[in-house]
Image (cartoon, rainbow, N blue to C red; front, side, top):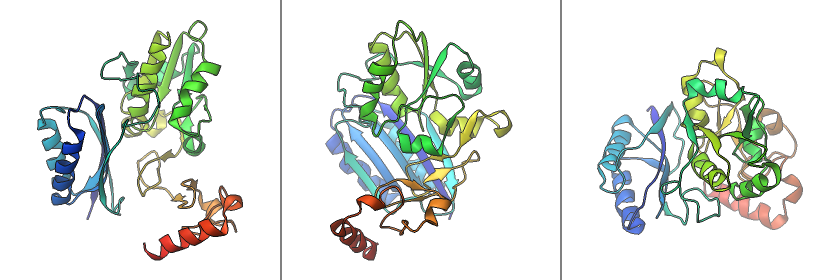
Length: 289
């Protein structure tokens, strides 16, 4: 079976996300889908996989929902099931910035830049290019010339902005992330802090890789994704990275050959912090997988 992976989000007020969760989970299971959908009063954020018919049924149902309506989505395919089960979760935020006052549905966000125009924007010497993802994601790949805020979570980004960016000095700021959702909040936050010319990559890195030929690309490396593929290359094909179940860090083929790597238990990034108690828990989880 060829699995279709659909990634999408929408910031839109949801009056009863709890009731929506129950109905959505039931429908997704009926359509044979797997993946994760996050729901909050501010909207939804999802990566879901299934056959062509199942994905189309989900998208059509959401598009026809009275509170949700139309939205863009990104697609890719894989021969291996990228998720084990279907989950629909209730959250305070569909992407956690930790600043509840930031709501892209109610505030002005940055200017969307189509992937075909992105190279021109980020090669402007007056533009400060910021990778809005976390440090371990940036390690796998990023755009040429991008600054790495070295954040451990999205919540850390406002602190980086406060210490490294100045609206009076940095007149043009461009941001990007995997699928676009983090930049919705990040650019809305920058606008609220007085930055006037703020841009973000429409559809994120995944849309860029799908749209821009590799010969013209300014992307360097691979892109971390939030499913069992772990990372994809410029053709959106899975790479040889594995995910360490001990710490959640992507592990390269070279790191998989290191003595600290034990599938499902540890890797060079977390081996030093592996306690006997944690090893026991991880070994038990491995036995039940």
